[in-house]
Image (cartoon, rainbow, N blue to C red):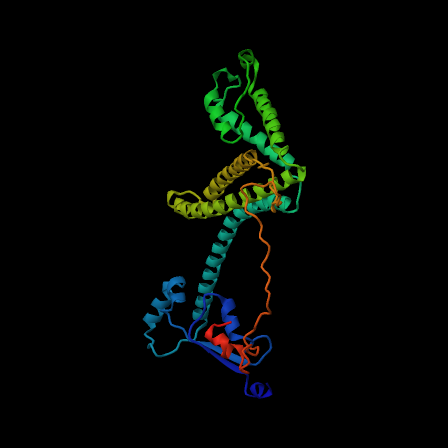
Length: 344
């Protein structure tokens, strides 16, 4: 306003300086800044948290040596520079914290983009059959590799344990491997053998539906449900792991590096769980084909043991309402006469 300009502008008086210079400038506003008239003065103590934690001890020692009384203000460029340097230290420390948090968030952001990309395909209604079959093959490869003990020939494999693990996900009960073929069949050939059987079983599941699109919709529903559930659990596990790796700095190990390594392993485990849960759910689909019964039974003369259908009862007299004149001729309303007595 013109009157404030004539008076010299707004006078700002502060009792402390903030850790951030940006906050101090916001408190000042445009008083004495950016071409506006005014002035701002801050009164600080050397015992304030800003000076006590981030300023040099020499400043307080110098003031004590000069013997300046406590109630006498000190205005010196050296003190202003000390305050500014303390603020720079705080801002640098806060910037380092934010940058560290950004590095941690970047790990989750990369994983989030992968998961959301898969969810987007499902939500857009894409045909997920080939994707599901690729999950089936990867699941078979993972199970075979874990039970082959690093050997290419299947003679020394633990086939019983392999069958037990595989049947829990894909119901291939009969491997149908001849004894002569065990000597020549390699791990890759065995994986292809199981995959062909798994595809036939999957086609049997598809044939339960009258329309192929019903199976495609089931694939999208199960896949989306499994992804959402596993992803939420993964977020909680990553948050817990982030708190645990922070203690590794005491062992001269970078917590961020450990967070990246362990986060990568946990993401792989989550991906494998999504594949196995989805495949297990889809192979477990069973369509109920019971014949639908008629909702209304036909009444015929030959029906025995069934209750006969009674015709609705029709009133022979006109219904009397409460406000109608009473039929006795008293001139009163029905509700105040025979209706009150409960008589007809």
